[in-house]
Length: 436
Image (cartoon, rainbow, N blue to C red; front, side, top):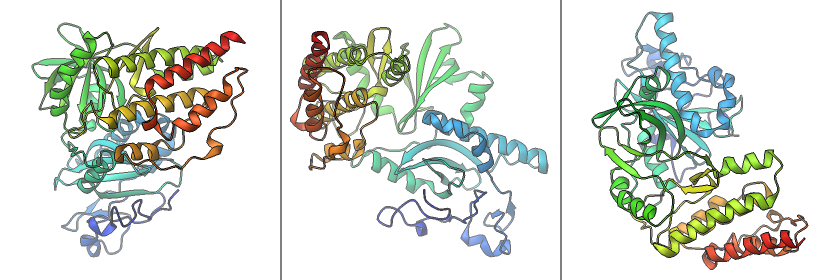
């Protein structure tokens, strides 16, 4: 945990002097401090000033966050709840001071980068984009930082999508979504109105909502972009149709709205494969039961690769939906520079399925996921195997050692293996259970 007042970036990525706003190390408050107006405050560190020198109320979120630490268990809820905190803050300011603070800050959305959650705010007076950074491993003494948001947006896009020309979109405001979610106010998309019924998830690219059409009653999903989604829609809409026609279940793109930077999609029932795994573990179900569903997902991905010569690009357990015994592949990774037929995406899919297999066998996530992903993106693989990451497997299966050795050799070198190799090992391992 970094101490209050320390910057989360090393000098190679971001320098505090790049921003007009700096951190003042107060353990209990988040303050935006403008050095240009510091002298106008007479050293009052419990206030922040605008450039005219007038005092603006201190914005203290730590008390709110302390009371709601359980919300941090699910990352997709994080930014919406911080947005709610800002709405509550503005309401309390109006009640206590009799002034309207609506012109202060509008909450946009959050992204994660280098161990910090960045919550992007728009200063409604200057139009500047700011970033509220909160340590990912939240503790009561977590430090808060506010830094210039546009530079952080560029860094996060480059950090998550190096060299891919991904552009962040600053038009989406989750704060403005809150009334639609909490007060059931219809949301206009294109020429239709939709009622938001559930927040399905939130990631680097977008927030996904479950909505129903107010006229027809049809239930669909709405993806609102944190990055520009128009090219995503144009590239994926015909491809998803072809994938569905080949017999692989995946939600279809229905329409795009430039005003919202949103895509209306088919809604598919089901839990993520990650949640499915957790449920089976809580029920103390056996490994063969989870491996059977894993093998079914794997077969769908093999069909995608072999039949259509396409890859998903991010086929980890959160991007599989399980409805009874039918897996659906969701959230294809779109890149302006990497095609779905690329070697990079093929290797990413192989590695994602190896990580899921590791998760099933060892009941923990593979520790070096990001390092290997980085190696895949640069197609530069180094030998950095840690032997203690592959303890002995003791499931009473004659192929325990075979599976352990396969994971040991393959997970750091996905470029040397295929999805068919994984399927062969899994089938042999399942056969080993039937022979014991």
